[in-house]
Length: 155
Image 1: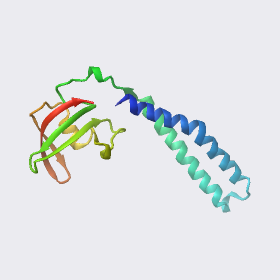
Image 2: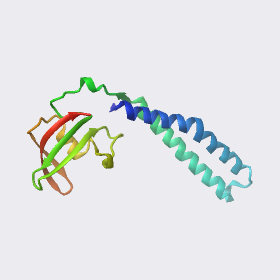
Image 3: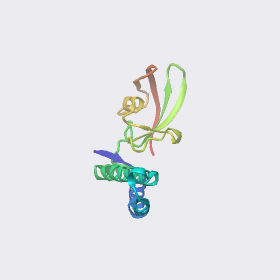
Image 4: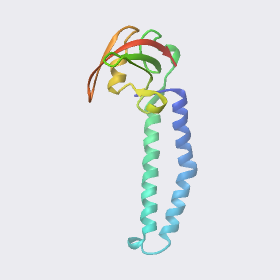
């Protein structure tokens, strides 16, 4: 079971609808056209159309599985005083005194450029459940990070 924000759930549902209603019909049309060109064993266009069809079907199935096994999280039931899913967390790396701010999200919403880290990442997992002032220790490839939580807000 994965929990998603309403926004991300709607984005994935819209992508799935677009793939099923617009992209897949075009892909099957292209495949039929390439197939009609003759010998399939020597037809690069046919092989490419089959490859695109496979990628499209794979993405459709992936999105269907995510949406089937996901639930939209209700922000009103989340704790305000502890780091949880959808929390905006500001913390200080105690070894460098660098301050960082990230939102804790599900793995399907992770976007480092937008400041969103997965709750399953080493840092996200270490921050979960902590309160302001507490120290979280995250084991990352470069070593152990000690992070002091400065503030928590619900995004």
